[in-house]
Length: 138
View 1 (cartoon, rainbow, N blue to C red):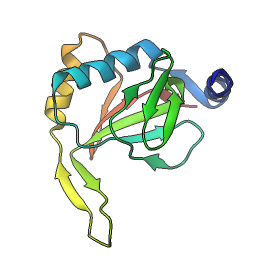
View 2 (view 1 turned 45 degrees about the horizontal axis):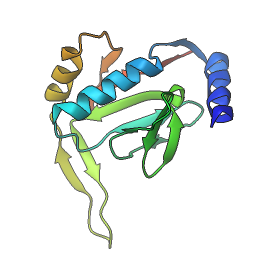
View 3 (view 1 turned 135 degrees about the vertical axis):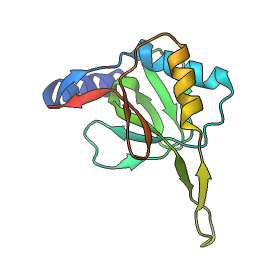
């Protein structure tokens, strides 16, 4: 796993102008949201070096400090997270050709939990919700 983390750090150094989130800040964010009881129905995640957005379940903090479990994707180094977005409307895929469900998510409650940590997080308000930015593009 260390090789994966080192590879991600090199990619960030090459392709991004600034890193705004440390491992500690990501963990504070995830722990606060988990402890709050706010109903997080879904997130969108963009990883460094990947053009695709992913929609895993809410992150579980993997025991080693520098990692997060984003099931069903896998365990990832926190440094790989370019951004995480909490959207007002979450699209939940369903099996057997059933149309997706559109679930409302209270991004104001999520923002209140983030603000209550007392930490300054790099948050952007987007058309779809709130984005916590890990790295800025070069």
